Each structure stands twice: as structure tokens, then as C-alpha cells.
View (cartoon, helix red, strand yellow):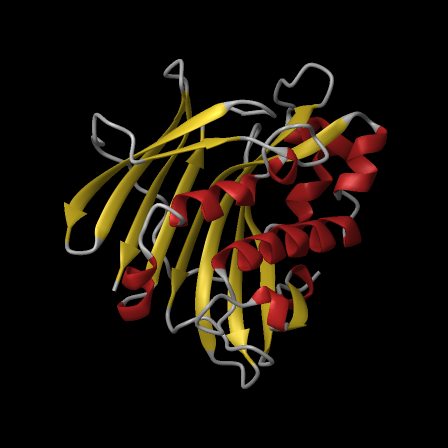
Length: 248
């Protein structure tokens, strides 16, 4: 199998309901598209969600990094997303993405880390034990020019935002949809900031699950030069996720 055959390419268009107030593709929608593309690519190769569910397994997103070369595409513009598997370990796999405009120019890239879990026990599954490690056949050398996720340093001692988890936050696995955290974290910042600056890089590391009825508190530390570190916790102090947002 050639390297090109290991890469999946999927075309899209920025629908009006997918854009933010600037008329550009919103990051939350892009995040959902990345997850969909990952499932399309995996399904075409025999390890998608539907197939895994038959064995009571599912994929869980552990880390996600998005970095933009240019601003997101505008409303009605066509664009495409490529995805490929960079590496496979016993408990995790690295999957990368590239976003291109209609002319094939790069708009941004993403890195992600996934684990497979048993839906009954919620414990991780050895990836190399599924279908005799067939996923390793799709590891691809295609480069991804952005850095891997870094560490989030100390954050503020008082929350800047609080949210009670409701119906629209919950996914088919019964916990908060991974991408919903992106929307909630970006809600921390005032609208005026988005009028003059844009997100250059967004990182998120998922630590624990949250569910319907949980109250989440968002802590945000200004690190200077447009960089912010965020920690999301339940009111009992349990850390749910950590994030880094860089504006330019």
C-alpha cells in the first residue's frame, strides 16, 4: 500500500450555520469535522466506531492540537481535510490532519492522540490485540509540521467561568462531547478579543470524563503575549481537562 493510499481526503464547504460571527468556520465545527473525518478514515479501513461497538469498544480522544497557518475559511468557501495515522502504540495512536483551501493551500494542521476503551469497563484496550494489530498497516510517514502538545503550567486560583452540563453537551457515550469543551473554553474570552485577534493555536488534554448535571469551573491564567492556560475542574476539584490557547 502506497503512502498516498493511507491518507484520506474529504471535501467540505462552510455552510452559513457553521460559521462564527466573523463569517468564518468556527473552531467547534472544525473540531467536529476532524472527529468525523477520523471516523470516516478508520471506518474505511475496518476500525471505525460502528465496527468497534460490535465488540463493545470505542475510540476516546485523549489530546488535540490545532494550529492555523492562515485564518479559517469563509462562509460558502470550499475546503478539504486530510487525515492519516502517524504511529500506533499499545494503548494510544497518533492521528494527524491537514486543512486545505479550494486551491490546495494549507490553512492549518492538527495532531490528535486516541485511546481505545472497553465501553463496559471504561478501561483501555491493547490496540495491537485488535484484529491482530491491523491498524499498524496504515501508519503513514506524511509529515505534520506543527509541534506536539506541551504542558499547561500553573493556572489562576479562582474560576472565571462556571457551567452546568446539560442535554446539548452529552454525546452517545453518555459523557460530555470532546469538542464541547473547545466551545466552552473559547467562551471564556470576550467577543471584542475575537474582533481584533484570532486563535493561532489551541491545545487540549482530556483527563477525566464529566456527565450530565456536573458543574464545571474554568480557571484561566494569562501567560502574556497572547497565551492563556486553562484548567477545567468539577466543583470537588477533580480535573477534567487542561488547555492552552494562543492568540495572534
